[in-house]
Structures are given as structure tokens and as C-alpha cells.
Image 1 (cartoon, rainbow, N blue to C red):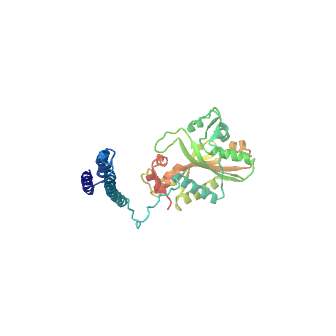
Image 2 (image 1 turned 90 degrees about the vertical axis):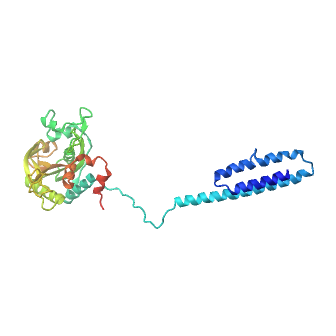
Image 3 (image 1 turned 180 degrees about the vertical axis):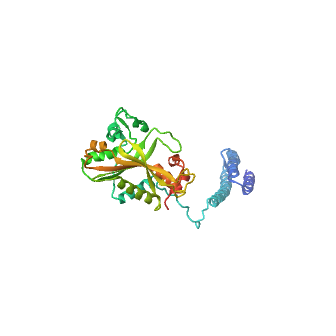
Length: 344
């Protein structure tokens, strides 16, 4: 039995010295030291030995086991070290490389335009007024000289929630609410930014939801020339110092007289191009003198007070200012489009 143990030791150490990976090492551990391994098989025969031989063979068996386990542990440590080195090499980070820049968010282009418009009018002494997006039929239509069944309501085919409540189609109700709250006091000088909702087709230039900014001035001896001067100042600060405007007669139920306002084309400077359809002008907003009936319903004597109002679509201003030809770009959340408007 002694010879068998010595032979087993020699064989096991030779096999372990040639092992190539941790998998083979595990197989050899089971082969020589497992419950059904070679060493266990030999030591089972100790029962047939004499009392004097058993301690000697037992000691030799323990020495063989210790020698095999020592080499196995050495090989195991070697393979673990190789694995660690390989992982560290694969995960190596060059700490001398510059850091990766973090992409920062930016103000949405429509909000940028709203802020610019607000800054311009605040600089002219206006204050900002806001109101509910869910509005009553009275403030959305009737207080603005649009009684029930008025044909002009068809221009603002609307989202009704009940017979009397709807999603506002314009920010003009804020003007009516403000005048009513001021109870005839003057001056009134406000702009009203906010979202509005209409059942417009979702095409390149229309959306069921968009943003408006409307303005209102009420006082004594307010004239059409005041309106023109205000809009000229606004357009020059918004589009450039050489911008010109022209007023064209139009119709709005809440103003009389009413005018559409055009600005000289930003692309050609007024000489005519494809963008302005070779007219040199681009329509920008609607405006006019506040209708006497609107003043009267809001608590102002039209014989003593007058005023002007204007309203513009923020998307329209943004499209003209930045040369965007499709309103849907503002709502598609395409980072490539929005990143162009990031402020440096």
C-alpha cells in the first residue's frame, strides 16, 4: 500500500504540474481527492492492515493528501491571478484622457421666443397677465363681441367640454377678465401669453395646440398711430432694426377698425423671394382698435376711453425668425432640431 500511495503522489503531482486552466484543475481535484477519488480508494484498504502498519500508512496518506492539496492551491492561486490580470487589462481606463462632456439641456425654442417677446414688451411698460386654459363661453366669445350663433365663431371651431366650457381658442379672454377686474381703471397695458386650442388641421403650418401672445392697451386718447408705433418697435427689436411694417384692412369681431400686420421679408429684405412669394412681405399678426362694445361689456365707457389690441402666434413668429418651414418640428422632440437653438 505504501508503494501505491507513493505512485499516486508522483502521478498526481505530475498531472497537476501540466494543468492548463481552472477547469482541468477542478477535474483533477475530484479525480485524486474526491469521495470516490484515487486516494480515498487506496485508504479504504487500511482495514486489512495490522495495528502496527495502520499509523504508518495513515501518516503517509496524509502526507500525500497534503502534497496534492498544496499544489492544487498553488495552481488555483495562479489561475485566479491570471484571471484578475486579464480583467484589469480589459477594464483599463486611461486616466490621462479628457473627461467626456455632459450634454446640457436648453430652453425650448418656443419658450425662448416667448421670453424674448415678453422682454420686449416689459421694456415698453407692459405687464404680463394670465388666465385659465379651460374657459367659459362668455369670456371666450360673448365678452369679445361674438354672441352665440355668430358666424365668426366658425373661424375658431373649438373643443367643447360642456355646453358652456371649452378649451380657450385665444388668449383674448384674459384681456376681458383683466378689464373686468380693473373696474374701469386705466391705464390697462398687458400682454397675455399662453396655450390655445383649435380644431385646425395638423399640417405644416397648423396644430390643434399652439401658443399666442396678445396685447391690450386701454386709456384716454389711444389712437391707431399708437398701435402702429408699438408694433413697429416690437418688430424691429424682434427681427432687426431695418424691419418695416404695413397694415392691411381686415375683420375681427373684437376690434374696429381691424388690420393685418405684415413685416418685410427676413430672407430678401423686402425685394421679393420664394419665401415671401415675391411680394416682399410676410403676414405676422392681427390687430386693431378695441371694439366699443367690448369696452362697454368690460366696464369702460367707449365715449371716454379707447384702446388697441393685437395677437400673434408664437409658432408663427418662431418660424419666421428662424426660417422653420414646418410647425411640427417644434413638437416632435427631435434632439437634432432642438439642439440648434441651445444657447451657448
